[in-house]
Image (tube, rainbow, N blue to C red; front, side, top):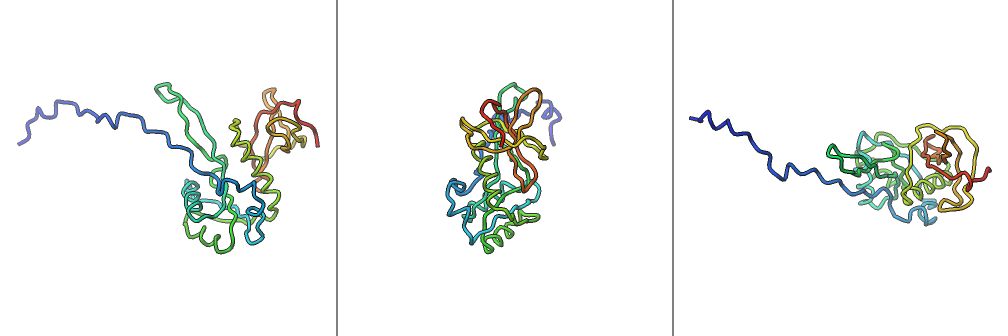
Length: 206
């Protein structure tokens, strides 16, 4: 028979459960790492660029599987900083374009992609050179660690080129918000993009 006094003591939480869960490191968002530096990879006529729309929250799963299969892909992941309830600064990692993964694959590799059961639908990208130029700019901006704001739709604006600085040669559109100049980098295929603050002195109209 159980003693009723056995339930008077509060049950303490084990110490290992009291510790905050560790923040996971950033996962690989590109394969191979030199995808946009090596034209023999991204301009291989035996492969086609596809835009894969994933099932909900399956983007990172798909990317892990693609890396294991040695199938080239890109879907940018950026850090997000926030404060925990205790006031500590934390970092998590989020996709800039949720549900979208760009894949460079032969037809056989495309079938391997579909076999992962992570994909809802697929689309062929007709203008591969435009896509590579768009993705290359965003990839470089991610590597530089500049804060990027997702843009769910493309705004009309003056087309410009960056004349100097770490982003020399970049092309995009100027948008102005809250008295600040921002450079909009588009992924034309998605009709979406990202923007970042830019010194107006280093840009010139096209």
